[in-house]
Image (cartoon, rainbow, N blue to C red; front, side):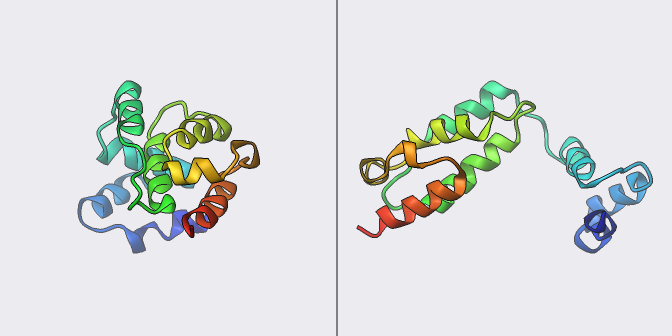
Length: 124
């Protein structure tokens, strides 16, 4: 609830004006983020989001943490977000060959595992 109370400190311009109008109806931070998305980001259909997810594979020059951050942001835009294991399956096929040649998919059970193992693989 502290995050909800702190919204006036982080919102400015149109978003601050919007907040003044909705703050009494907001129940928790998840509600804030849902309302922000509805109010300020046009909803993309799921097929378009998945097209963006699969559009680009990781390039050798892309740090894995940046690649994963961008893909996770896309997944979060879906109305029905796939389970983390499914997201990892999708992403693992798109990481640079340097990663998937050195890291076993069986060793990856979370995003933290992926990032940790990828960091090691990127050192070579």
